[in-house]
Image 1 (cartoon, one colour):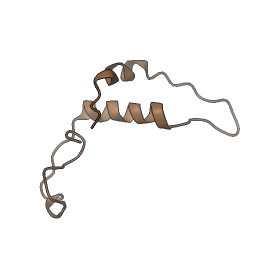
Image 2 (cartoon, rainbow, N blue to C red):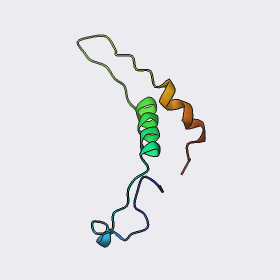
Image 3 (cartoon, rainbow, N blue to C red):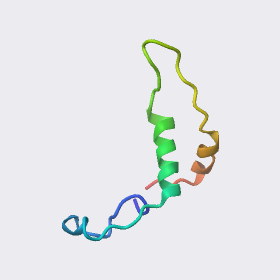
Length: 65
């Protein structure tokens, strides 16, 4: 995914030709994964409540690929 991975460089050259990731895209992707795949909780206590509404607001335009 452009912005998250360095897809333009062959694996043999990856460590020598690094590119910076898009931090805003990474944060949106991270929040998306947490919101849709993680179950936060504990066997010993109540489930914590997290409010990702602000972070999730921009995910309507999140790239599908």
